[in-house]
Image 1 (cartoon, rainbow, N blue to C red):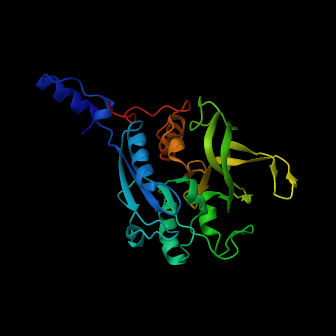
Image 2 (cartoon, rainbow, N blue to C red; image 1 turned 90 degrees about the horizontal axis):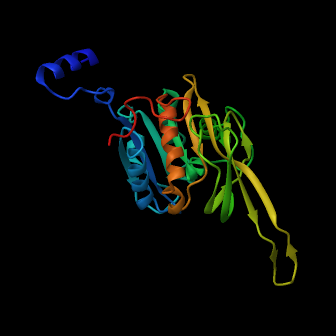
Image 3 (cartoon, one colour; image 1 turned 180 degrees about the horizontal axis):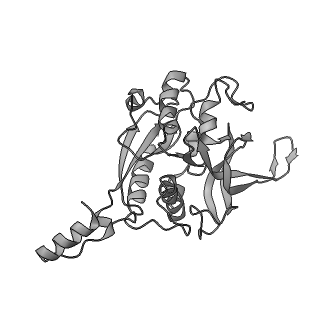
Length: 284
């Protein structure tokens, strides 16, 4: 039913005039969470609440409570598992899932045009072989990195990260101020493939002295911590951020703003100033 028909019916019935939002269906967002080393039991709920508070959306959560590096999601084994969703948020930590067939079925969704939002340990998932070395296009172990658009394989200690937005004109980052996180993990950049950087993170490791009195000087490291990519023949929109280890970061309004804007950007429902298009704002 189009807007003109709705207006006519409302006038006839003496009802309030319908708005554009009445015609917009909520975005169908899938959050897949679980695996090693993170508080996914709470982070999945933080993400769901945070996204739904910012975007006209219905967030479905698939959660695996395992604490291992091999969380298996039955959904991913099904043909067309992604057909009921507009965008998938990968928040799993699956470093030791190495079945190419299983991973291929995940990637099929994104090659066929379903956008992805990749958070933190998703960058260190679905890897095998000599993944510590730069992969080459077409290598058996390159496909997940090709979707991400950047290859990362490890991180240092948990220390604050100073985030500086390098692309301040992206609708994902427009108007969001630089900030310094609580203790977080700075992921390395082995190589940038086809990703486009949005933000850098700088972390300073303090000077250390071992038992023998040998001093290791302070060290400053800077890597890309948020970026976008276009993946596959349909140039599917992909957003990734390596930030998000600790709950205090995930529940930070600035983090949730960035992730929620990325959701909107991924489905092209955001304007140049980072505002949701009419009808896609969260309903009050």
